[in-house]
Structure formats: C-alpha cells, structure tokens
Image (cartoon, rainbow, N blue to C red; front, side, top):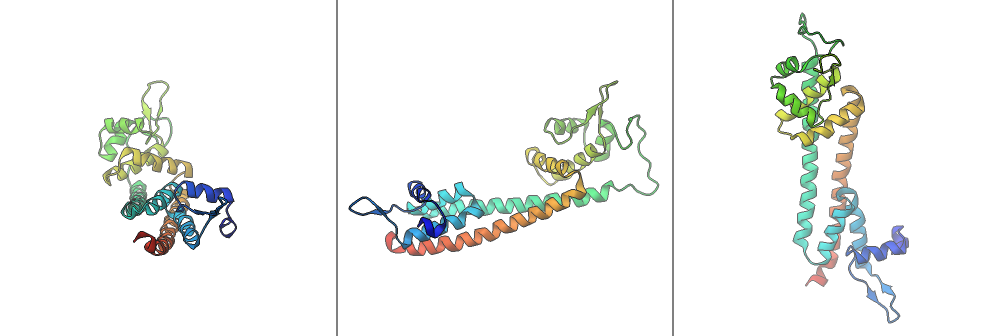
Length: 238
C-alpha cells in the first residue's frame, strides 16, 4: 500500500486510524492486511484532497466508511458551493475593476475640485465622499475596517486621501454596491495594494482564474475516484 502510493507505512497507519481507510484485517500475528478496497479508498482520498482540502477530504472519507453517505455528499456540496461563491467573488472584483477604470479616467475639460491638499491627486474626506455619493461617516467606517488608510495632515489633523486611497475607496464602493460585506472586501483591497495597483493585479486575477479552474477539475477527478470507491463498497454495505 505504501509503496504503491508513494507514502510512508506510518502514513497508511495514520489514515486508517483517522477513518480515511476502512479498518484493516489482521493476521494471527497481528499484521495488517490491506485489500483492493483499501487501495481504492486511498486513491479516492488522495484524489479528493486537491479539490476539497485535507480536512474536508478526511471528513468525506470518514463519513463514507461509517456508512453516512448522505453526510459525505453534504460535505461535497459545501465545497462546490464555496467554489461557486469564489467564482462569483472573482467576477464581482473584475466587474468592479472594469467600472473603476472607466470612472477614474478624467473627462475632457473636467476640473478637479479646489482643495488645499499638499500632494497632487490627494483630497479630503468631504470631497471624496461627495464624489462617491456616500457620507463621510461611511469613509470613516471603511477606515476602521482597513479598506482605506488616509494619512493625517500634521498641521490640521484632517484625513488626506492620496491617489491610492481614492482607488481603494472606489473599489470598496463598487463591491459594497454588489452586496459584499466589509470583511469580504478587506482582503481584496489588500491584494490590490500588494499588487501595486490595478494594472499588476491583472496577473493575479489570471492566476485566480487558473486556481479556480484547477480546483474544479480536481473536484471532478475526486468525484470519479469516490464513485469508484462507493461501488466497490456496495457488497459490504448490504
């Protein structure tokens, strides 16, 4: 079993103890005896891990081995629901970024609002709130949630939003309009900051697409191996 899967013998024992594999038979001398059914269970588990994660894959196999197949299906459904939610989040981010790019371009002949901010492209909380069509209190809430990080003018103590802060506020505004919670938006804003802006984020979004597709494909592979294991278990479940 271990050599065939590239695992250690201790890993096989651990998987049996965790309920991932059905209990092995024993020889009169106490040696474990693994059958083709155990090998199929191991293949199913290893195929489930890339799509569902180690913990969920373990719970799925444990449920199957305890004849709680409906519970296994529920866990699988939850993983698929999470994948769908992740896809919708990605679509919302891409939609928000497209709208953001279209709204940040200055209109011909447009004049910026008069401010006394020392840095070009910076603004205060009132003008920014007015531009977004929200209340200043909303921007303060977003600041507490980490969505925007304005600096303070050392002389007046007023919040000063630079170009990156304005970008983050616009993105947060688009996602809030899409129904996303602040705690869901915060990591997305952090990703934009880590990427260094919207342009570098395109590569991250492509990678995000790739990872979601790989997860979906892995779920299909895991489902096929699990279905084979369920068929192999049918005589023992009668």
